[in-house]
Amino acid sequence: MKISKEVKVGIVTTLAIGCFIYGFNFLKGRDLFSSQRTFYAVYNNIDGLVQANPLMINGFKVGIVGKIVLANDTSGNVIVTLLLDNDVKVPKNSIAKVVSSDILGSKAVQLILGRGDIYAKNGDTLIAAQEDDLKTSVSKTIAPLQQKAVGLISSIDSVMVVVQQVFNESARQNLSKSFESIKLAITSLETTSYRLDTMVSNEKYKISSILSKVNILATTLANNSDKLGNVINNFSNISDSLAKSNLTSAINNADLALGQATTILTKINSGQGSMGMLINNDSLYRKLDKSSEDLDKLLKDLRINPERYVHVSVFGRKDRNKPKE
Image 1 (cartoon, rainbow, N blue to C red):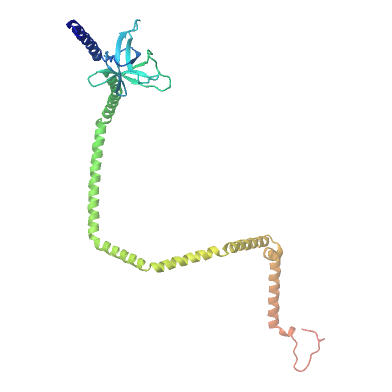
Image 2: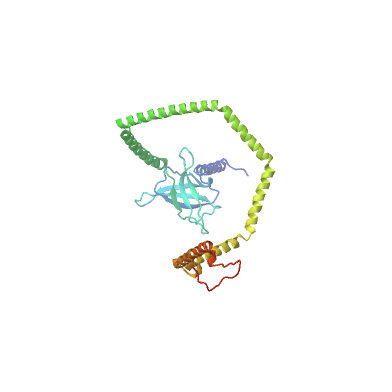
């Protein structure tokens, strides 16, 4: 069967028109041979977002931006159509955020997936969000620095006022006197250091002798460390013996004896008992003194006149009835 030229021209024209339509849609980001779901997002400012910009999840392209139109009301909002591949599940609380895709300012829609088991259906409207533009970001960054700079300038101004008040004529004179005093103190320190160095130089032999004696003493202690250890052990044994001895009982007994002696002395001082009466009653003392005096007289009389008390006769016994002279 022979095909006419007209049929061939029609077939070629149809294929050309089809390729043109497919290429036109491909350049606009549409794929006629793949099924896509449509979602919407409402923005108050799209900041340069255009049709066919990419739709991404964590930097991975999952669709494109479709038709962009203004809302029918007077709010000025922009309705953006988002064409998403069918194999991506989008929770209903996901956020469609307009972001910058490169440093040149190209825009894209970043799809931030939410959490939950309820997924958005074809034709649903997602939550819209927008990244801060360059001016807003710079303003947010510079605003704290500006506040700090203003505070710093105010602080510097206050410091300068204080410095001007401090460094007046009187303060400068005081500072000059202080520096002069510091200079004198440094000079005195230098003189003292020189004298100390001179003293050390003059007495270095004595210092060397002292250090030698200290060294000898240390050597002696090191050589007699065993003896010192024995002495320490002996002291330790003595302290252990004292600790083990019945020292507490002896102290208690001594305390009891002192208490009893105190009681006895108290009774004596109060005149109780024979000892108390002897010490505190002076009549007994007078009687004893009188008796001692009479005894002394008797002994004197006995020594002077023994014949009154002792009768000795060589020739015989005298008449006892003879009156005494």
